Image (cartoon, rainbow, N blue to C red; front, side, top):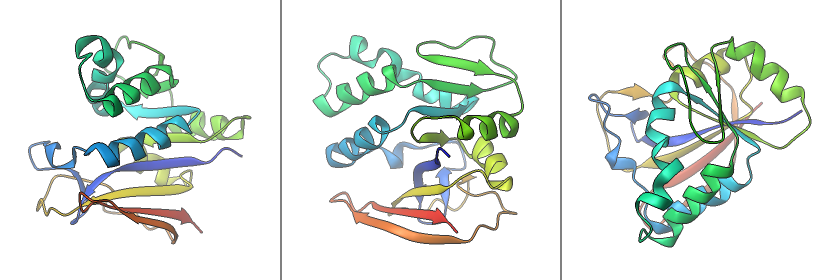
Length: 185
């Protein structure tokens, strides 16, 4: 069965975005960006909700828009463009790049995707991840904990979530971000 991995930047108090949706505090430096590049390279598919899709759409044209960007950013743009993506949305009418749009039930579709042959599937976006977590579909959680307290915003986990986890990897980056990878037990 293909593993499903929920991975995002998170504040020390557990938010992926601040009270006004801000996420600039989570911008990766070169070292962390290269780590994200490697993780993205290992995925066979990435699932997104509408809001995260809209944020990540930048990477579809980043290489053309900003050819003088640092190499680690251009590398991510190339990886992201090639990576198949599936966006769950009832409000979008179209998506761009190597992306499919679904207005179907993510729980049923992800159950079927996990049973197919292939490599790991990534998921991003709190609302989509909360639905998949509630149904026991997420196998691993990757938290990139930034040394910032936001005091509110969009939580990484929904408030009614209970998942037993085992810590399987940690790494501290020079930017003081700590990566924590947990496996569901």
